[in-house]
Image 1 (cartoon, rainbow, N blue to C red):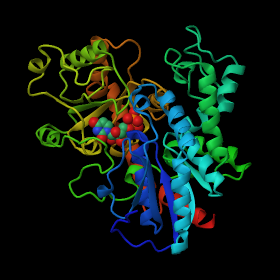
Image 2: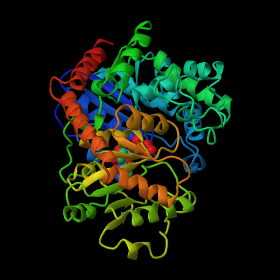
Image 3: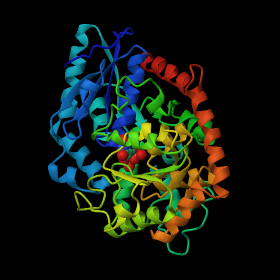
Image 4: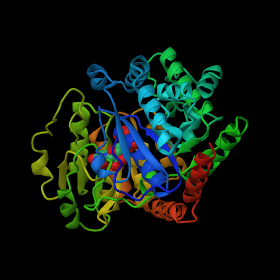
Length: 469
Ligand code: UDP
């Protein structure tokens, strides 16, 4: 195990962190690792060989690869729930995680106590392995506080008992009075949901990953979700589980990289687009990206492309490899690039945080993955919300109806609707309030990250808690 050359940990305790190997889960865990290291803890990141982070980008952290635990066929599947269940089953069967944790515990003889495992909430097998070794665990939830409350087995059962689920065509717009502001259509996408048993199984395990933990870490901040955090505090208090709202994790510590690139990105980021942005007017560009996981159909990409072209708004569009399911590199429609010449740029993977921070960017068309949402909020960029599945649906509802910093683009993706939504966000009067509120929220998130801000204080408490375990 190689220790990096960062500051020497002073507090005599080591924590081991185990992220789910997908971009949206890996990044916040690595940012948490850096924050804990900056507070004087020694940190080891346990990771799979699949989607492994690059240790060279994280001086100061130690990395231990767990031998391949995810079969190739599983890595290739686009069904996220199947992937998570298979990964956990493979981890349990192989015993590799238990072996890695046992080795780290054995190294304690060197003088550094192994205080706990911090694991991604979906990696319940890792928690089981730690429990078997008597090692305490803390769980990291990489989504919102609202999502934390929604994606639990008791909530899911309640939604069935009270008739909200299974969703039907007639109740999709019904408000869920127990979970305002959510409507039935924000809960779980009925058309994409696997069978009830599988959902119950994964939510049951995810719920236990909190109830069996000595603490829950959330990538959100007080000024954004104070009501939801208050409820979580009340709910967990009975069980003696403290929650820590430490977000947005990507800005908790200063990035160590020297070229401005996101050191947690699994894909190489095309930084040439930054020069292209330099040549655009302030607030003029719509940045368009759907994260690392979701797919669109080939037809939807055509509608996206022509909607952008017809809007007349300058744009930076990310078409990552595999965005269209089953196609490695999707061609854009004939005539599109000529139609948007000088006004539109298409790339495969962006330095997203830098793009959002660029003064030329005035809006973000996003799938509302939680990291993208927090990154947009941090930069005060209003959103065009197009959620596809899972927690993206409730997040989009909060963006558009609670924080009111976005325009929701619902229904069948159609170029005229796309064009209208873009103009509403970027140009029309209705967008003025949305853009103003996004700027206000930016001030609030920055206050949470100041030295006495709520997120920094929560990290202090988290470190004290870890040292007390
Ligand atoms: N991202 C990036 N370049 C891109 C698109 C996305 O670096 O072109 C990063 C983005 O900054 C975010 C992550 O990928 O941190 C996506 O996470 P999110 O939770 O938004 O969505 P997911 O990929 O999990 O659906």
